[in-house]
Every structure is written in structure tokens, then in C-alpha cells.
Length: 251
Image 1: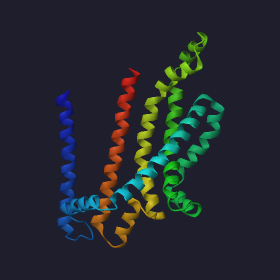
Image 2: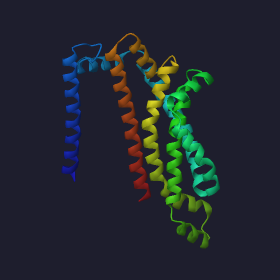
Image 3: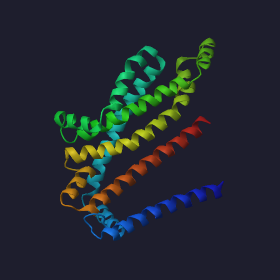
Image 4: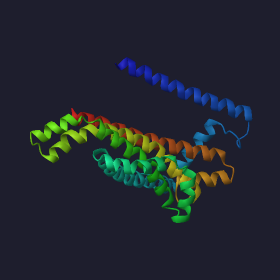
């Protein structure tokens, strides 16, 4: 088993090396920092940005917006998802709304949000609407995956409602919630940064990316992108760690 994971790690490492090699070849081919900067220059820019005095404010502002959007979408998604999973009529009522939210282009939501809200709220609003359908749909699927016979048997033996919820529903839908949260978090980070690029709050990774693009600092644009990827990867790891803890709890 250890050998298997070691091979997987080697493959992942080889993939990163290949990507860096392609990046370096493109940088040598174009030979222009305004088109494709060299990887080493970009990594040096990443180090400078992380070491700057305002980095904490910039990164934390984006993180807070993402967490707020995730929390709101999580609460709404789980609450509405449970109701829709239990009640077929409510599910029929809410399904068109979920389809509509998933189908609306993000740019359309952004343009409306720019009219409705101040710059600090726009990224949160976009993140919430982007993540909500993933979580809600997964919770609905989780509720439907539970064997109705188990619920009927629990009711037949007069098992308490809270015990049914804690020992049947929650363990049954938890993997679906984790999966939905993982997908939502991935797309939610992109939505937050896109919202920051257009709404231009005082602090935010998207704001810095837009500012760097205005002054043709391509290395800074890529550097902030790499920082955003690292943040997204970190939260993805946290979600997966939580999943392992939950699986252990279930066992």
C-alpha cells in the first residue's frame, strides 16, 4: 500500500515538472515578460508578494469572503436540500430554481450584483449563488439514497425522531455533503476572485490581479493566480481531512 501511494506521488510530481518544463519552453520561445514570464521570475514575485506588508490583508479579505459565501450557501443548501429530499412536492417546487441558478452565466450575475451591492458584498453574493446549487443538489441526492425501509423499520419500532436523524440521515448524507462542499469550494474560489476583479474592493486577490493586469505586470498576475491556487488547494485538503475524520466517526 505504501509503495502504491509512493508511485502516485511520483506521478503527480512528474506532472508538475512537465508543466514547469512547458512553461519554461514557452517563456524561452516568446522571450518577453509581457507575454510569458520565466517560472523562476514568477516564483520570486510570489515570494515578494507573500513577504509584502499588505499580503495578509489582501489574502485574508479574499479568504473571509469565500468562507462567508460558503457558510451561507452551506446553511441554505443543507436546509433546503433536506426539505426537498424528504418532501417530493417541495423538491418539484425548488428544482426549477436550482436549474436556473446553475444555468445563468456567472458574468450575468456579476453585472447585476455590481448594480445591487457594494464592492465588498459582490464577491460574497456571487460565491454564495455559485456554491449553493452544488450543496443543495448533493444533499437531496443523499436523502434519496437512504433506504426507505430503514426509516419505516425505525418508525415501526418507535425509534425517536432525533435518533433517526443522528444515526440514519446524518451518516447517510454526510458523504454527499462532503462531495458537494468540495465541488462548491473549488468553483466558489474562482467566483470570489472573479467578483473581486470586476467589483474592485479595497483588498482582495482579484483586485491585485486587475491592478497588475492594468500595468502589464504579467508575472504579478500569474503570481497572484498561483497564490489563489495554493489557497484553494489548502481548503480542499481541509475538506478531505474532515471527510476522513467523519468516516472514522461513522465507523
